[in-house]
Length: 266
Length: 323
Image 1 (cartoon, each protein chain N blue to C red):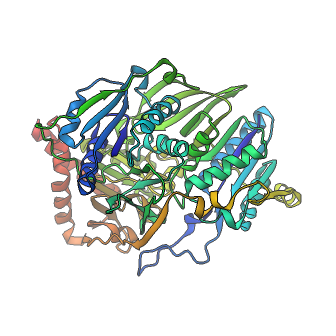
Image 2 (image 1 turned 90 degrees about the vertical axis):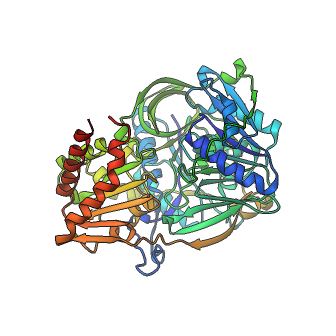
Image 3 (image 1 turned 60 degrees about the vertical axis):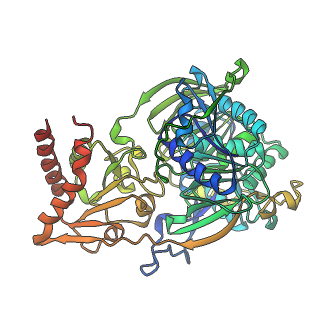
């Protein structure tokens, strides 16, 4: 069973600090890492390969240094890594990104039974690229997958976590799924894996290699435009109670919560 | 035309209708509520919340969202009506259907907006939080139609109902081929209320400052009393005190309850990104200098577990007195 994992390189937001004055994330000197949600997706792909055979291909669109993230995927056990990198891809919104990823999969005639992506990336937080790629490739799509129950030839059974509960779905393959962190806990790379990955080739394709017209990708191919960016430090004046004043604070809290207790007159 | 697209005639539909009406009035557009749903209701009522028309596809098989039928029906209807703007709630429904629909329509989509406005040319100004939530970006879709956005639930007020207005209801026929689906729903298990952090009015959220896994029970008890949910930091989820459904923050869910109680949470930037737009924040932490107090309205410098216990005890006596 062949699995494609779509990965994104993101700033390491697990380790960022806030600027105490402005309240803005300090982005200088932050490492780039694989989007944490994608790491869980990759782990799921590796487990499917280990139980059912086949291969795992990781694909990313990003700047040249995305190679590091792809190399990490190879070290963990991916068989093939594809990097789509070109200045003409820069500034792509979710539509243009999805167009490039889906067309690359099509034009490279990649053979797959399943495409996995993370529920969202921790930087853009849109979660749109997965369903967009699925729709562009006309695949069945299940989002918010929290658990994979069974994988067999031609179909899989999985759980999807939604607002009011958990749905259990049977999906025909090939399909695209977007996964939550609970699907699988990522393994750590081994020294042997890292050494092996150093010798593996990362296949790099430019826009020209794949026959993209610069007008249809990147910023010029993106329907959306950022008009303005502004800071909004949520400023709250915290009334702090400590020591002898605690009782007063507690009383305030009870006043605030009381209506919810009496809510339905139970 | 501004179209509000949803899978239920629920609070999310109402708040989007209210906003759509406001935007439409500025530029003289029509407001259409487009529902793909499982149950027949009095859809004329949509008029009282701001809709001119309600286009409704109803079939029992459309009770729970599945992309294949929803995409087929929505693409057909949208191509027929050609709306200038489509908005949906940023729920698991909206965040799945709208990207797929935008891909099919070759147009732009902005995720999880917390502000919407319209300019004189009818451009939708879509404002959303960018990384970490301290930066906001306003986005527009200048040359493509429809302009599409998902909107974070509870962003806009639910409009007052005007019973003098009725929407014109247009039923969209659901054909057999619309229901063809490559995904098959086997079963559905309802989540307990305490895990539904995105819809709860009150969230009792816990961090490692609660000290012991057993103390999560205190938060559960308090959440039950206020009919709320239990939230958690990533550290708490990683330690398996609570499941991932409960996680608030960058790698969890973004929440916006009426009251957010952060108990034993120091306030890592990743956590704050997920809760800072809550209406009222109560923080309880032993460390007076914990960053969580900077995003709180009311803070107690105290032990989290015993304070939650005390709050629960007092509310319990109120509950008993009410019986």
